Length: 100
Image (cartoon, rainbow, N blue to C red):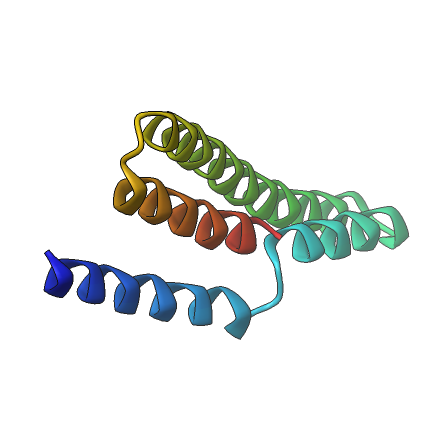
């Protein structure tokens, strides 16, 4: 059981480093939406809006996954399944960081 937790923790740590390695999806979505506002032609507006939409969708998917993990952490915590609750909370942190 401890080896499984160690492996899971290592994977989550690596995933969270990946989330920090690039700018956040929300930041990228906003940056491209603002670029669309500043663009002078329809084609450029559409291109920036498409990129913004892609980043916003990824952020939304991570938020949904983060909420699911938080619900799992709550459920496991109420059942006194400490290890599972902690794992779910760690997964929530990873998803919420990725959504930023």
